[in-house]
Length: 328
Image (cartoon, rainbow, N blue to C red):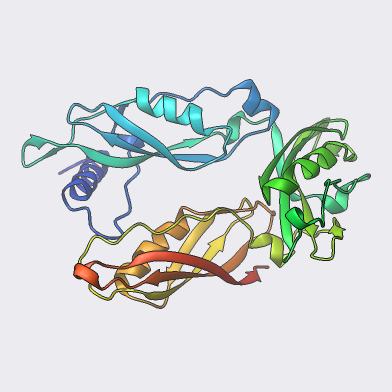
């Protein structure tokens, strides 16, 4: 009788081999940490410490017939942890995967968790908690080259030190011409020290600014603001379909659940062609929204154009966030 650990390892190996031999639409790559013979640990740089970088980083890797990583790219994760994760993944070694007795190349996901390295706590939107929150100064706002036709949201990632001062600020989303003013304003914000069962602790959080078409700037933002919750940090496009499906196209609606950190934890498509539904679900699972400290359901509409010439299949066109429902 096989031991449980041996059985799990066998199942994981078979899963990797199956994905390598049958790259079907919507196949989710397996986590391959358990196949590593030498899984290198990423460095935690001073810059990562300064920005209280934390959370999960997922790295897609291709492993050759000898167990060496020949390519690595980040799928999801904090921007300050991405490069170090890629470098660690490239230096890692894996067991050789065989199919029918022949060594093969495989693809999989390496998962790194940096939560234990961060000495900060994570919060969501902290506009309401600021003792002093200056509004951004944006030169030429309202002039012809910088007119706002619809509401613009700029989110700035900040770290607040033990004294309540903002030590680092970096724009996560928003129009490029509005970001610098928001970052400068965020650096001048002031907070009360944060205490959790002991001395004050640093806080990783968000400051959010709304720019209205009439030129006003709103800073009185709540964590449960639906416009902010649905703001994507990275909305991944669906991969091209692996099929010759003449005339394939249309709308695919996907309902996703996001956690307090803005990670998509679940994605369910309930309209559209089955192939496009699976592709859209996979893209949604790899997407990222603002970490507002609020759980929510978001309805995303993926639009595909049908291409009929020469038997070609659908092509992704655009997406739209239709609605947000806050989960209590």
